[in-house]
Length: 105
Ligand SMILES: [Zn+2]
Image 1 (tube, rainbow, N blue to C red):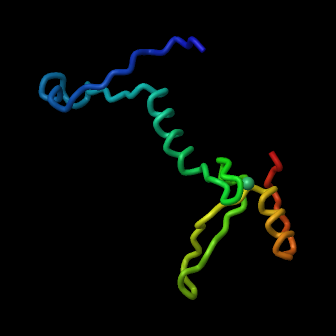
Image 2 (cartoon, protein in one colour; image 1 turned 120 degrees about the vertical axis):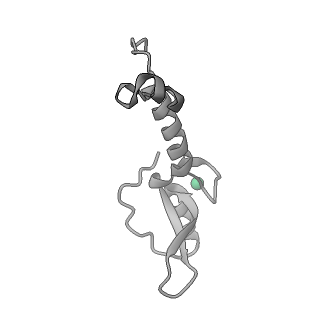
């Protein structure tokens, strides 16, 4: 990727007096923002399987949730990848629930 990017301009507040409010430019490099955001989001999206300890996207795993209070919020405290979850269910005599959208990858 060798895209020709326009150089972003960011003026400090101290320049307001010199160039005036209307002339202020506050542009950030788009790549920088995107990278920062996706790293943060990615860290949030990734989870570790409680069984095999593989790291995967939480959306592709089964979340193990618990309700600490009656009527309280459910919190996901652990995640399991689908194969581990299915295995766990079978080992514990639990019927494997429908796991739509979870891929076996
Ligand atoms: Zn696993």
